[in-house]
Amino acid sequence: MDDGQFAAHGGQVPDHGGQVPDHGGQVAAHGGQVPDHEEEAAAAGGGGRGPLSHRASTVAVGEPEVGAFDPGEAGDELGRSGFASVVGRPNVGKSTLVNRLVGVKVSITSPRPNTTRRPTRGVLHAPGAQAVFVDTPGLHRPKTALGRRLNDHVAGALADVDVVVAVVDATAAIGPGDRLVLQRAVAGRPAHQVLVAVNKVDAATPAQVLHQLSGAEAVVRQVLGAEHEVELFPVSAATGLGVEPLARAVLDRLPEGPAYFPNDMVSDTDATFWLAELVREQLLRATHDELPHAIACRVVEQQWPRVRIEIVVERPSQRAIVIGHEGSVLKKVGTAVRAQLPPGAYVELHVVVDAHWQQRPDAIEGFGY
Image (cartoon, rainbow, N blue to C red; front, side, top):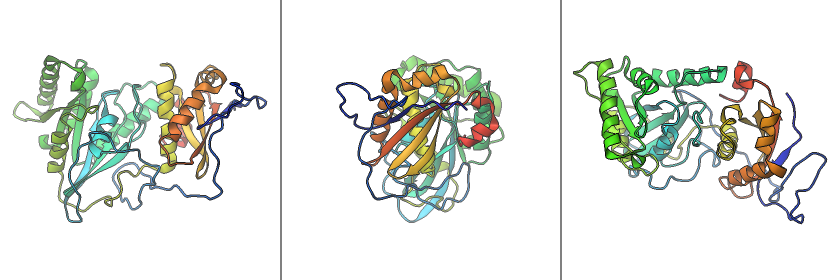
């Protein structure tokens, strides 16, 4: 591993006459004072279905989604509960849809394909029911060990759930990737457990939406047989249009059972992993197309509110892009991340090179993917 001597601290940049101070190879921008007291930021981890006994920390989820589906006040009496996996090819809007369904940000989002790298669970609490939505990586043709791991996560998310929501893009033709998703969604599953969401209708014409609905229905009928029907939902995860009928359809299909999460918990994502994901989200938005798959992040030091996060790339040229001119990209990323954390958070970003990490299972495991 080639350790690049670059660091950046999110927050306010001190005034040095417009110059970034030179610290012997360190490019740094410091913001905020580190309080003397320490706070623990802890949350339960986990991937698939299983016991969930811990509450998520205050840094483990984002702000409420504007225009999110409001299911009403959840009570103590629960009649139905279960898991609903949201699947689709890369970049169809699965994470945005899960955030909208749950009502808060539980998954990072970006315009880049395969932003999601492991199943992320978000909980919708409704009167008499609780739905645990599982956001999944995009199903794709893998070229690396990381890509194969992402597809394995999708297969696992389909194996033990009560409902599957298959997502297709209203603005793009249904292709082989969509057909594969729909085939896997319905394979070995009763038709009533599968819902198809045609997303991004806000960016499509009515004719496009109808064409996608028809195409998705045709693929499902090919797999299940012409006599079976699957419900289809035109939705816009970006605006919330059509999300409420989809959410209610999921809730109606859940089996009877106890709650998996307490009422005040909306995700079981580990707080440490979430902090690293927030950094990666901002990097995906700030860097060029060639970088998304090469970037990984991990927390290497945490004594709340001070957090040190390592950004890993595969080549020195990528490190230079991530740092930016005089640390400009890192400063921008650090500031954006701190804006999503409790006041007083102190975020330090450090860039290193680890060649071919995407091809090494040990490295992939180390990042939590």
